[in-house]
Every structure is written in C-alpha cells, then in structure tokens.
Length: 397
Image 1 (cartoon, rainbow, N blue to C red):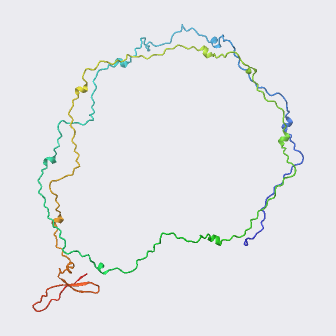
Image 2 (image 1 turned 45 degrees about the vertical axis):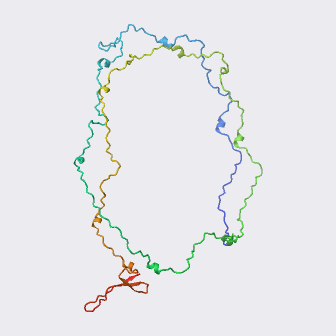
Image 3 (image 1 turned 30 degrees about the horizontal axis):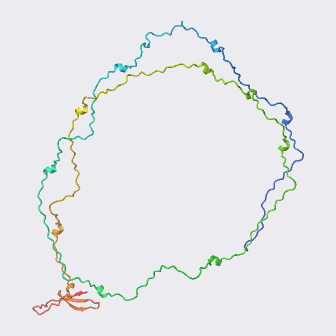
C-alpha cells in the first residue's frame, strides 16, 4: 500500500448530442388526399349471387336439338365397297379348335433313349482282386544269422574306501566371533505418546494483516420527475371511432326453409343407360383323361434287363497301428564298442599311503601343514661304488 501512488484521472470525452427542441405552433396534418377526396355515405355493396338452379319437378318429354337436327338416313340402296375377288374371305364353317400343328403333326410311339452319361457308381469286377506285386514276387526272404553280442566287463570298485577328508575341512575351523546383527527394520509402526501438533508452516509464518475495503463509488439515487406523463399519441388523438354495423351474410331466404318433398336421386345416366345381358365365352374343354384302373400284369424294363451281381467289399489297404516286430535279437554292436580299447587306470597312490600299501614313506611336514613323502627304492650301487642320488618326492595333503 505504501508503493501505490494515486494519480488524478480525467474522464474520457463524451460528445453530448443536441437536445431536441419542439417547434413552435401546431403541425398541419392536411394532405392532398384529404382536400380532394369527398367522403360519401352509402350502403355497402351487395354480393351478386344467383338464387340457385331451379329444377323442374316433372320429367322432360321434349326432343333435344341433337335428335332434331341429326337424322338417320336410309342406307339400303348404297353400293358396298369395292373389294377384289381374290381377297381373303372368312370361312363359313364352324371353328373346330384344332391348329395346323394338330393336323400336320402325327405323334409316333417311340421308345425312350437310354442315357449316354456313365453311371455314378463304381465299376465292380467279378474276378477277385489280384494283389500280387513285383515286390512280393521278386522278394526272397533270407534267414538272418544271430548277431554277435559283445561281452560286457563287470564293474570292479576300488579296494580302498573313499576318504572324504579335504584340506579345507582339516585346516579351516571357522573364525570365532559374534553373529552379524540384522539391520532390517521391524514391522512395528512408529508410535509416539505426544499429541499431534497442528502447527504448520503456513500457520506459523502467515500473519493476518489489517486491510481496508476498496472504494466503491456510490451512484445517485433515482428521482422521479415532477408532473404526470402524457400518454396521448398521434394515433389516439387523430383517430376517432365510427359506428359500424356488422356485415350480414347475403344467404338466400330459401336456404333456411325445411323441405318436405322426398329426394329425387334419379340422374340422366341412370334413366338412359340400359344394362344389356351378355354371355361370357366359355373355353372349349377337351375330353378328360381317365387312367386305366386295371393292374399292370406285364414285366417292366428295369426288372427284365437288371442282373443282380454279388457285391464283394473292397479290402482296406490302410496300415494297422501295430509296431513292426522282428524275431531276431537286437544288434547293439556299435563302432564305439568295436573299436574301443579299454586302458588300465592307475589308482592314485595317496589313497594307500597311511595304510602302507604304497612305495612311499613319510619324510616331514612343512610350515603350511603339508606332509612330504618320498618313494622307497632299493639302493643300487654301481660297480665303481657310485650311488644314484635321483629320488622323487611327493607332497600329500
């Protein structure tokens, strides 16, 4: 609020329109139409409407103009039209209802032709099926010699028992010490006996400063103008209501009168038109077909020509699901078994050192705890008295 500097503001320029000034005097409403037009008073125009067509009650017995002016002339002495003698003359005989096709066409009794189309059924043969193939005729089954079975050598285990003592088991005895404590947090929730503090950063740092309300400009109150408002308009002052009568419908006086005479619904068409009797042309019907009721005593073509043959079912060549088995023994001789030469595997002398079954003797133990052994040989002295010093040493765990 201290940094705000209030500057004076000028209101924007608003152009004030000129006020309306009513001209002095009264407006002359006289027009050329009012001067030249003379108002006349007379009755409203009456609609020109006929009272309606008047129909005579009796029957018309006179002759119309058509019958009087147009007469029927006598045409008995008139010569007929000129027609050539070779022209077609309609026959005088009665129409029998048969066409040229019935006269010219003679129906002959012909047997029905057999179908050239081969039948859909498979052609069967009376002779048995010949299943002899070239393989079956040319194949010669030879006897097989029994296969050579290679003798298997039996497994011989070592004579000395297996010593499972290792250097690690003998030398390493573990380091004495406490068990490493687990730093894994427990699953217990952190709880405190103190009440929950509701003091937040916003509540602690925020301070409520006193503020003034913004300035609101008060508008001037509405003041009702003095006097009464004149509600008269140019239309209300100039227009005057004239007395007018309601328009009466010019309906004939006979329309509302009731008529006791019956309604005559006869028309010219109903009186002059005569209904002639007409016979419909019936179609010519031939003699109906009556089938023979006697039973058929002959032999049909199918029974006369059909020869039944004995049907033999086809043998299925589908292989069965049984495995192929042979009576000979299984030949398990492979190239590995035939070419493999077994070699003698020497037993490690360390296994029999402590039992005295080897040619090694204990010498000493080094700083690391390793035992040193050396082979035992018979001293061989040469002729010149020189003893061979070459000896082998062996280190055993």
